[in-house]
Every structure is written in structure tokens, then in C-alpha cells.
Amino acid sequence: MKERLTDGLYGLGWGAVKRLPEPVAMALGRRIADTATRRRGRGVRQLTANLARAVPDAGTRELDALTRAGMRSYLRYWMESFRLPVWSADRIRASVEIEDLHHLTDGIASDRGVVLALPHTANWDLAGAWLTTALDTPFTTVAERLKPETLYDRFVAYREGLGMEVLPHTGGAFGTLARRLRHGKLVALVADRDLSSSGVEVSFFGETARMPAGPAVLALQTGALLLPATLWYDSSQVMKGRVHPPVEVPAEGTRAQKAAVMTQAVADCFAAGIAAHPEDWHMLQRLWTADLPEPGGRAGAAETRTA
Image (cartoon, rainbow, N blue to C red; front, side, top):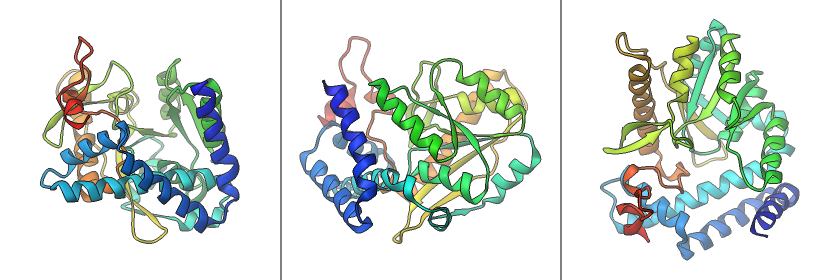
């Protein structure tokens, strides 16, 4: 019943929100965000705990304000995403500005293949639509398997409608991604949360977290460039972003050791982007190992602290 309800709510969002006048849709998003912030559910409490790591000098009032702004940013992402299928190509092109884009365009032109790694900041779906529209560059990405299956199918259809090739997180995605890169294509991956047991430990805002090694391993295995990128909203209707310089491949070490060093470099770029615009980091899940359940099932210290 809960899964059917979830699927129905997302279906309502894609079906109804895109037909609302834009000011009404955005005001609705802010209202939902503010209500969720006041209710202080588990996701909101975890967002506050995560922001406390990203902005360690913030006091209680600043953290409360950041959480409220973060939830508004998160709901902006959803309202935009529900409406993206009806945006014109001109609207998509005008809604994104990327700094240091030459790192990406040079990489694409080199035919080496490019792995673009992003955190959960601002609107990564809009960034993807912008890539396929403004740069006329198709790319392949991976989507987490969601329940019910019909909800996963909705997300795949939505992203494919924006011009992306979408692979399930499980079921041999790595091999397909590697083939795309060997043919000089672009692969874009949201890479600040480990969804598997193969992540590597990194230092993230001074504490240990686990992040996926996949982007680094793909780059090592195929010779593709690994480019971190970060996104944020400015005060207008424009989303901004930055493509960071290519991550260097270490000269020495095993493949696993090289992947760990490269993943740390990606984490450092993510941290810099998040620290500059913490309110646009949509991380409502546990990320640091201190917050993860202990082997016996008891929540880690940070989860207990924010409960």
C-alpha cells in the first residue's frame, strides 16, 4: 500500500505540477518545504546533521536557517523536475550557466571518454537536460532501483525523455558504462553517496565517509578523464555550476590504491562546492560512517544525536 501511494504521489507530481502556472508551482514547493522543516522528520533531522558537518562553525540559528533554505532548494529541484518535460529548449539553455566548461568540452572533443562526477546539489536533472540540449551531447547515467518498480520506470522514462541513457544501478551497468567510455562517450554519475558495499573511505569535512569508487575505477580502466562538477542556485532563476580540472591519475600504486586517491580528490572538490553553497546540497540520508547503523543494528552517534 505504501509503495502504491508513493508511486501515485510522484505520478500526481509529474501529471499536475507541470500544468500549474510556474509561480504557483514554485510557491507550492516552498510551502511543502517549510511544512516539512517545521515537522522535523527523519530526513530533515539528517539534513541538519549533515549541514553541521559542512558548516562546522554554524550556531543553532544558522543551522535552522540553512535547513529551511536547504529544504526549499530541495523542493525547488522537485518542482523544476516535474516541469522540465514541458520546458522549451530555449528555456533549458537559458537556465544554466557553467564555469570552466572548457574542461568538459575539451574532454568530449578528445574522444578519450569523460566521467562527469557530481554530488546531490541543485538540480542534476536540469544539468543533464542542458548537456543534451545546449551542448548536443548525449550521455549515459545510472539510476538507483526504486520500489515499487513502477516508480523506477517513471524515473527512467522521465530521464530518457530528457535525452539521457539510463541504466539500472544493479545488473551489469559497469560494463556498459566502460564500453560507452571506450567509444569516447560521456558518462555522468551522481557520486557523493555509496549505494553498494564497494565504496571507499574518504575524509569528507574532516570525518570518514564512504563514496563510490566507480567513477575513478571507470576512468582508470578505460583511460577516460574524470571530471568533478558542482552545481548551485543563484538568486535568479539560473542554476550555476563549475567543472573542476581533471583528476590526476597517481603514478604509483595498485588500481585500488589509485582509485582511492582519485576518489578522495573528487570528495575534496565536492566539499569545496558544498561549503560554498551548503543550502543547495540535498543530502537527507546518512553519509558519514559515524551515522551508519552499527553491526548490532543500533544507530551511530550522529543519528542518535539528531533523533
